[in-house]
Image (tube, rainbow, N blue to C red; front, side):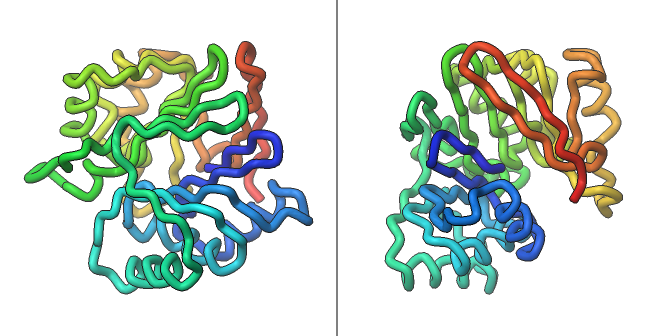
Amino acid sequence: MLIQQGSQQVLIDGGPSPRSISLELGRQMPFWDRTIELVILTHPDQDHLAGLVEVLKRYRVEKVLDPNLDSGTPLYGEWQGLVAEKELERITARAGQQIALGEATLTVLHPPEALLKDTDEDTDNNGVVLCLKTGNVSFILAADIRREAELHLITRRAVLKSTVLKVAHHGSDTSTSQEFLSAVDPQIAVLSVGADNKFGHPNPDVVTRLEQQIGADNIYRTDHHGTIQFTTDGEKLWVRILGAR
């Protein structure tokens, strides 16, 4: 996900393909702009991290924010090495942090200061959940959290109601409980999911819950629509389908 506010860019996760992220950033950013002000790694799974390693190599990154969850993989070791080598400012993501982006604000909703333990999958459940808000328009970006993390957010009364929900965990049946969906109460949902992926994402039950909540016409999927662009002035929200590249 690429957030652009004026000349500032925030990149959230990088997907599994270094080539794809490089090509898409080249299309979306001005050709002369080689700086990304903030790179956010929601959690260190390969399908979120591989592209970001390439970004650190190719772009001037000012800051990185991640939950500091050591996966112990060579890829995560390479990420840590590049952050140290380039002497990047590194922020450990914890609930309550706020990042000003001009007229927009990016708030970290999760993980908590004391990380969740002994859950179904601790790495996923301690991923970085964000709320991007400008004016009356907001986005919940739910990383790959599962039901335990969703329940944690609800019980600690995090402000979840939002215009757009980036559905957690690619639409897996581990997430998007009815309780969480009701708390967010979105008008639009986005599923970031690879075409013909081996996991069968998104889960049909998740899609059905979304359809019942917001209607099929308000669900956008990267496997069907390709790149999806949102533009807002804080009052109105425009959706543009850029398609597969």
